[in-house]
Length: 226
Image (cartoon, rainbow, N blue to C red):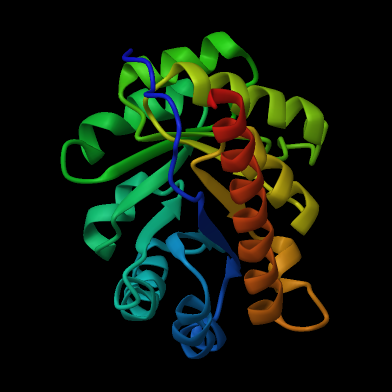
């Protein structure tokens, strides 16, 4: 894989994960306003499992609110529904799931991958054609690495490899730390929706943290080069 050019690098962008979608009406109402307040590159739609026809209907109902705002719509899994629902791609967990999904998604749709527990897995995903790699999401038991370990992995990837890396942030502080470490995108989810001030305030807060981290990192890089 080609190595990345030296900074300056762009400001990392937000990647917003929805709550588990059952009735999408509340999200349909809130998403356009939410996506207008911050620079959200993509929305990861988490579907509550049910029959395929219902899940497709839910994605199609959400699509105008997401894609109409200029964000990509990715499904969390459910590769078989991507084309039928008009989604832009899917997020897969693990190398095997990604390799199985690639023929269905490529070349027209996005294939992102997480569940990469080792550096070797991460490199294998990049070499296999992942459009991005995600570090730091909880595993099936709800466990995840420390923020320091996630930041270290992001920094390693950002320095050496071309495909974008995404940091899964569980708080505003982690969004700041992962942006500073070199993440191209910062995935935010539950802490945005659970914020007592409302998701708009939390999302703008996360974006501000990312911009502050990027500005500080860029200033440091310039000073070191100078």
